[in-house]
Amino acid sequence: MKNIFAKPENVLTLCGLALADMALLLSVPQYVPTLHLAKTSFWNGTKINQVRFGSYPDVGLAELARAEAARHAGTWDAWAFACIALQPNDKEKPVLLVDAGEAPVANSVRIIQELRLPNDGFGLYGRPRFSLNVDGQALPLDEVETPRWHAFLHKGISKLKAAADNWERWSIPSSDETALLTPR
Image (cartoon, rainbow, N blue to C red; front, side):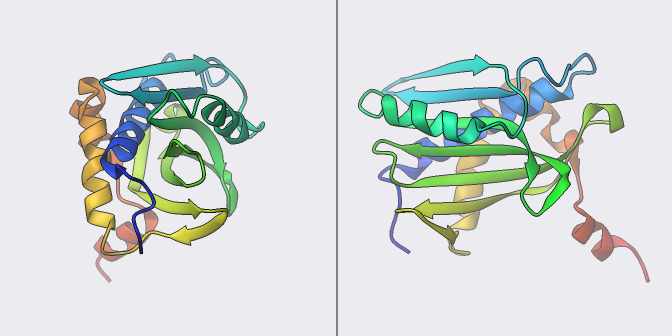
């Protein structure tokens, strides 16, 4: 697969930062689900800026972020938008969702991180999953690229020390991984 981004390391590092910030926000026991559910981060040269706004999950947040990214495409090198959403194939399971790209806004990556909400003991299930939107078509990420993209993502996570320090503690094996670890 051709590179969909000129600088995937910038896009994915920003994704990691946005993902880490949302995980850190959700991990605190005082978290109120309607307070700050969305955050847009953007990279402009050597500076990362972030814009927070509150809203309720699944009320056009991704579309709002994409419109904002398109509006600023000339001034933002890369953008990432993180929010809480419901898993597309299981409307009962909340996930951290990150949409990201670079200018122009034609191509984007979506990262889905399954989670357990704070009232159940905050945790992150499995590894983040990637899906691509290339010229309006949904495509899976090449298996060869997955480890590299995970490395860039974790580079961004490590930029937020409090999240990096807790990431391993927050990680819970997914149900598929738990089934593999359970003796028969």
